[in-house]
Image 1 (cartoon, rainbow, N blue to C red):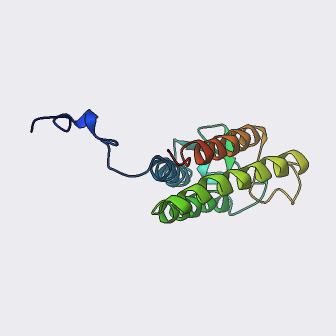
Image 2: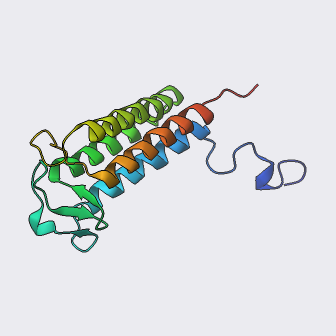
Length: 152
């Protein structure tokens, strides 16, 4: 091939032709699926013998840091499936990133407000989860707004 299209870098999007917001949403969704699955893997999750369905009594920690339960892991898996479904359209991808980011900011606030040793801590969340939820919330909203812009 000769001319401006002779090299792959000449195309507007050499990766796959999808809008950046769709690629970002798909990537985030796959990461949620991966994290949800890793929450059940011994060695990556310490204390899997103490993994509980829900509540602060779960003694399992993903990467030895983030307290998890079966419900917590299932929520990550469902979030990932929803993200993959929504990443099929630009509007859905933006909604997943911005809306999901808002959900994670609410989870961050929940982690600040709930007593970590009480029955109200059903997910469960600890201090490390709180920082992660804050970062995820801000990062997802930034991805949704910055990659979802319409170029003129």
